[in-house]
Length: 123
Image (cartoon, rainbow, N blue to C red):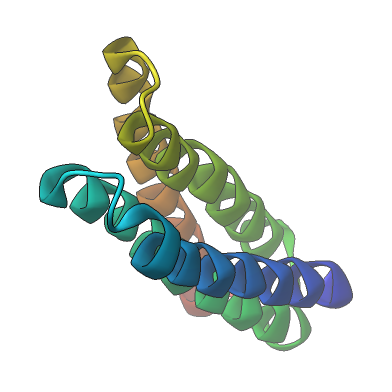
């Protein structure tokens, strides 16, 4: 699982950098400042959780067990739902999609909780 989460973390960071550059250069003239800020929030949280996936990869070797793996998958799901919904909303997706954004945030919170649990309970 270490390699899976390291690879997913690196790929997610790559995508975050590419989307950040796209926002700065390709969307700046097309989106209102408010929608551009929404897109950039998605990029920021994707990058945070790309780094979190690298931490999970490290933790898989240090504190192996289901809690660490669960944390990693929660970070992946959180990124897809939270950042993905913000990207779509900023470029014109229906507003009802905003209702799922908090689900991604809850996945992020659950991932951090699972990672903390692994750190505190693994011998």
